[in-house]
Image 1 (cartoon, one colour):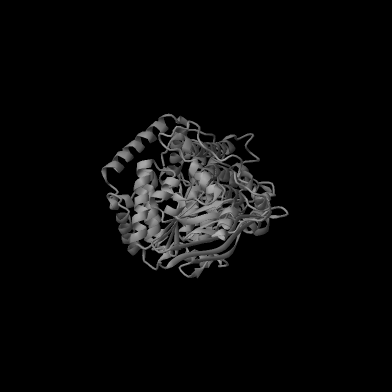
Image 2 (tube, rainbow over the protein chains, first blue to last red):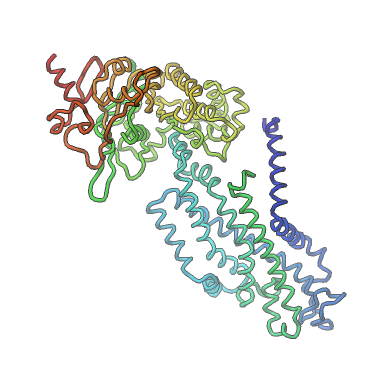
Length: 292
Length: 326
């Protein structure tokens, strides 16, 4: 039944609308293209990187960008282009992991708090608020200091400092959804709280969280790079852009390419993801016509 | 008389205020039998919806209910939330004023119906599917199979209300609460939906508590009618009797406000004054300030329901004194 005529017409209308959206959102397309490129780089890094990213070659150390090494080499003679390409893997993994961790903790908290309200809401939200009371980078620093430095701990630390935002966003949209008649109607039909929360409240309230996640993806990459830069995130031999910038700290005044290219990679990725996030926000905004 | 499905005695719904309490429903007693439709009419804020929600144990927080509500022999008042959740759907189901917002826009009809059925009857999901289909046929949805796969925005208001009714009856309740189910629909669809409710009530032996403020709707489908004013039932009785000889001054005024075609009177009738503040009710009769025939007695003591005919009760001192004279 799902392939009846009207739904086909619907689909082509939807595609039409999506095309119109794309043509009127150049920045979204730009962000999407760049981000797809980064994903391709990450997936096919072994085939795309011209050199082994961890191969040390002292005879070619700190070579300026040129035809043999497009982005030059670092103090150990490693090819920076290859390292930037491999670094995309680390960054994407960080972004995805931190988001999954913080969403899977924050969204259920917000859902339960917003749905039940009252004392449950107060307890859950005040506990979440404790994590918001710390300056954004201080908490991850404290946590990694306690758990030990390393990429995994840095990701855990970022997730811990990030989840309250999802709890808050989810709570506020569930609060609005809870007043909808279909929630009352479902209860009047005897549908239980759990099912109502998952089937009715969650899908209807998740748009703000999705938008937030698409924006946060870039910020988590940036934050992880910052942690690596100050020495509590990724550690060698992990290839990570922030760490690459950190390792070139003492040299980059004379050998600009050692910091400029990894830094530029961070910049481009975060920008692309943010443009993408802006686009997703517009796409899911009901005022822009229904594309969902 | 048929078996009583809903038996409500001295229902009171109380809301706490800063230092006091407000009774939004007071001393409300109702009975609805199998296959019977009871119309509950009254102005906005008279407590109709609160009375209905009480039957499901769904009075919005922080409201409290006291008194007795028995549905199909099961006491509702004082039950825990989990017990109430079992009663909902299976014992009493509800349909709402605005079908466009009473269904989740994210789920298709079959999912929502199956959810409701599975929650109230011991059926598997596939059994629930066939039940949904049967229910949709029962409410005359054309092309019911296609309807199951649709989302609420693909259906019209009248169809959605039929879906809501189908969802309610698929749970096989004994009591159906209809909270102004036709208010959001246009008049032709309204007639169809009313007819459907009438038909289902007699076929499935449903007791229906029909809330409305449209007197013509009451006249067309209800067996009995109860009129609420300021949280109290002030008159109840068989529809024919109440419409022919309204006993309470408020009911009389209510009928006089209905405009009739071809009447010479250019000015629309209305009831002067306002519904009294529920948190500050006057002593005596709640309607005294707007009543043409108020007496000294009305300011001192609140009238009790007394008979003005067989099965016809009204809470007015005039009725009571008339009864005394007989």
